[in-house]
Image (tube, rainbow, N blue to C red; front, side):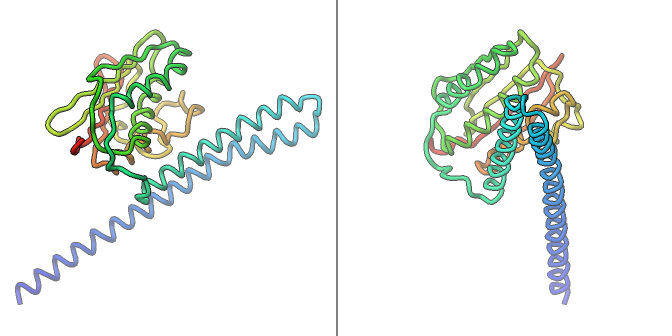
Length: 247
């Protein structure tokens, strides 16, 4: 009889855990829907305003068309990032078992982000082995790391460096991205990987707060981790760790 009661207690605990998890998932989806609605409302309102003004002031048509194009691109970017998040959450993320060269990916990211960095201006410095062979999705790992690098560039002061370092040890491939920016409040370090979270008010018009959330989802699908820590005296250090696999 005692064994039967223990089984019922365990079953009740598992059931409570499952209910709690479902409640968290439902709450997350509800908040995500609210955030998406909020993010879409502003560009849609600007599109409507530009269309109305274009009818009232036809001599400024070119200016209003440019505004419409700019907001259309922003909405397309938002929807594309949301689609990526949805695919990662659903486990539809392509081949994650093929061999790839991380050194090649880092080189691509440095080239892809150099133009943005030059506008600050700040520099991008990459350190580590020229070649690191590991298993994973080339496209997703590229995106996960690039999102972190672009975030570092966004907050890096002018005439400073964003450093990308790679290393291998104990079956893990480690990538760190560091900047000399303002850092993040200690109690918000984990929040920056949640969708639509913007810690700095100055970044409210630059992106949708989805880049680092996508990076975390990519790490989850690859069995890896991503964490952030403040640097001394200033700056942020983001560390991504992947299982190397069979390479």
